[in-house]
Structure formats: C-alpha cells, structure tokens
Image 1 (cartoon, rainbow, N blue to C red):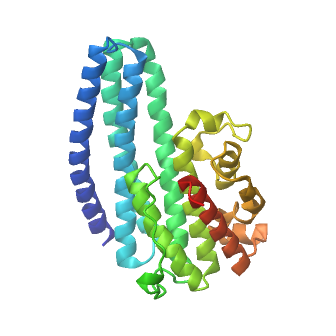
Image 2: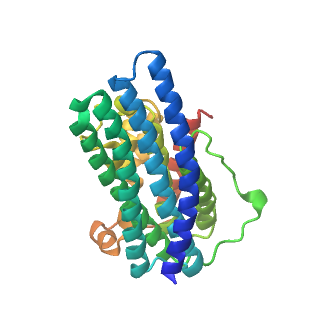
Image 3: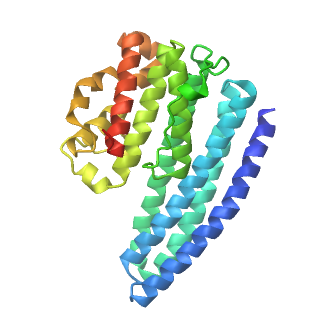
Length: 306
C-alpha cells in the first residue's frame, strides 16, 4: 500500500514540478535579459542569480515531494513504519538527484559559456546542496517518526473549540511550504499541550522554533555566520541551541530568551528513547511550558509584535 501512496506523491510532485519549472524558466529568461541589458551576461553576478533561482526551485520540489509522501503515509497509517521510511527515503533521494541534476546542467551550461573557470565552484555547490537536502530529509523523517509515536497524539487529537485556537499566518516566513507547516504545527502544539502530552509539546515546539530561526537567519546568512556565536558548519546543520544563540547575538531575539535556552536545546533527544535515558532529560509540565514560552518569544520577536 505504501508503494501506491508513493505513486500518488510522485504524481502530485510531477504536477507541482511542471508548474514551478515553467515559472522559474520564465524568471531566468527575464533575469538573463536584465543582465544582457546591463552587460552582465558573462559576470559572476549573473551566474549567482541563476544559481539562486535554480537551487531554490530544486529545494522546493524536493521538500514538496517528501512532505507530501510523509503526510499521505501518516494520513493512512498514523505511523511511519520502517518500511515506509525506507521507501520515502529511496524515492526522495531519486528526486534529489533528478532536481539537482537539472540544476547542475542548467548552471554549468551557462558557466561554460560565460566563465568556464567557475565550473568546479558550481560543481561543489551542487554537491553541498545534495548533502544539505539529504540532511534535511533525515531530520524531517526522524522528527515526524518520533511525533507519530508519541502518546498516540496523532490518533487522538484533543477537541478544542476553534474559537480557542490562536491562529498565526506566519507571514514573516519566506518559504511558502514552510509557512504551511508552521501554521499546522502551531495549531497542533496548542492541542497537545492542553492534552497534557508534555513530550509531544516539547518536540513540536523545538522543531517549530528551529524552523523559524533557520528561516530568519537565512535571510541574512552572511550576518549570521559573522556572529561570534556562529559555528563553522553550514547554517542548515546548526542545532536549535546554535540558532538561538546567534539569533540573540545578532539582535533578532531578545536577550531575555537566553535564560530559557537550556530548557529546550536538547529536545531532539526525546525522539530517541536511548538518548532520553542517557541524558536524563526530564519531561514534565514545566519543561513543556518553557518550550512553549521560547516559541512564543521567538514568534513575538521575529514579527516585531510586543
């Protein structure tokens, strides 16, 4: 049955791909015309703009595929079983190779026409993107598998009147797909916290906080990496503690949040029972409340609302 779901996910992805490919091709044509008018068609600035458009296209399509596949499997089975995870991983890797293959072909075609000496530079960028996408996929599979297993929350949602749910459109989130995920998870955080599902609350809050901080820091990645709190890894490889420390250091988040960091930074350990036991991470109402408090501080500060 999971293979049938993957076929549906692939069909949905193909439809999204056709639409996005056309939009990006049109955008690239306009970008090339603009650069031609400015005499920039053989410049590194033109190539970088081309790369940004193609890489963003590939990233969105890869995320769209695995998010769709995960959602469809969970909708049918409420859990991500090992065989389903392996099937999603295998097909997601194929999509990653396909989309980055297209990106590489497009960028190197222009590189060879404009600045052949940059071929190895953009080949390396493609390799880096491939690893980043695979890391993002593993992170999503780990979190969603853990959440699906936590206290039966997915199969027994708490009935809260719609009027009691605080809505947030997350308009400050730049990525359309990520914005949808944030809206969904923010509503679910409220339901599981009311249900007293402390572990689920901490994991969801941690995941959502991490996504919001990563999105915001990526808007000015150079500034983030210049922070004295920054680590040498790519931004997408930073954990929640790293993201929060840098966000505070560069002024995105109020310094008052620093006193709460320890209460949430190890949230990923809760997904793995062995790590939870080894780290003696206590899971209670207080820890869940701290996690929610950090989330609300991050949302408040990123939106600029008091």
